[in-house]
Length: 247
Image (cartoon, rainbow, N blue to C red):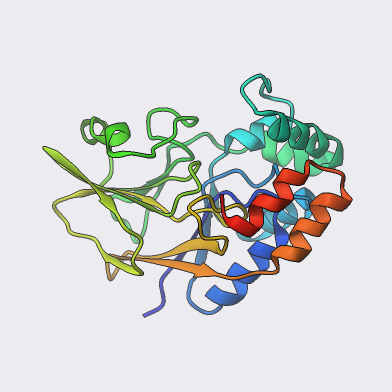
């Protein structure tokens, strides 16, 4: 059965990775959702933003979307991220900058066929800039979750967490996950444009509400081309080199 939703996050201006994901997922989804950070780091902020504007039905903002439009200060960014944000500010068209500036803050509720729906966030359901990396980061969240399923990004780590009333379990992204009705889930599809889990392949997920399944997927892309664009733009070399390692 076709999975209705293609879940993307953290594209980060990497158009080559986005193209590979779309080719790999072709014919397997009906609607596209995005968890933010369209831009920053990569050399194609306008191409990525234009595509998102035309194809994504629901989206929340990420911290780089705010930083790259001047709506956030850059004091918490490392030097490479700061240099990229400043470059992106100068590169974005006024229309694309305006689009990014007005993206919704999560949580954003998505309903499916009249059901209770699920939520989209960038970082955490409580703080859009919070990193949910370990069990200790999420063990207290179950009492605050308003839906059984929340998709999040920000960490660039594919996987997520299963939350029970008295315990939390890390989810290993082993292809297809069957959602159980008695638990809460925080699902990270991974980063399209800059994975940081040691696997340089672009990451994404497919969600089927009817089957109650999450399918984690990875796909190789032309990293050399994406890296060459970063170097040609005279962005920090580290932003290009880390693509090859997935860190």
